[in-house]
Length: 239
Image (tube, rainbow, N blue to C red; front, side):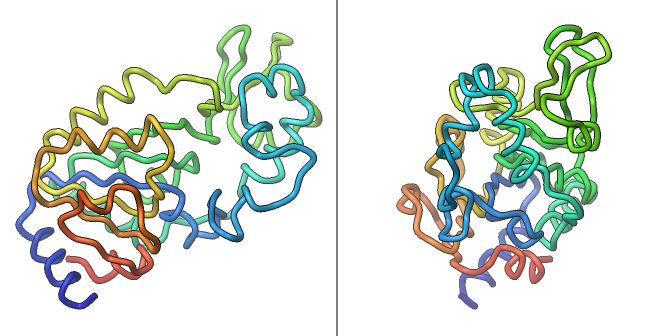
């Protein structure tokens, strides 16, 4: 670990165009559960599997059941940015980081001060009326009962990408552009098993691809450097 950490420190110092690609593991140290670990949402018991509940067709057919799960498990109160979020925001302010590409929907990168964030799967902080397009914040949804309704009477939907839905084209285009221009690509806290998001790292053309993840991923063979330690621990030691 020490040798790999020193290599990463050197690469960060020399970098001018870092891009960070992150997943649920980035936010677990902020108290937000991930989906696929032993204690994650996918290993808990509900009347329906989380993958089913968090699908477009389920939202349409059973909106009350969707929102019961969504309020309970997806709207996390009081989470704060951890050292990884803070360090990335610092690099951006120093002109060293091009962008953050995240699979997370918690808004913690922006809370830490990051401005160039491509949210591949949307954000729980934004919710919109399907009839008139009016936006509502997470508190409105959290405090509403049953299926939240707009002032116009329309149904409010979280601005998150559910299963069976497509990723936003502009978001994908921006993420691909940033990744393809990076001189260092750091991937952290993700199993790299969710597509099409995981496929975006194939756009990287450089030779400093770093994986910071506790467990192996399908892309390990592509990495130029691998660290198996907690991401907050790693980032707290970087320049």
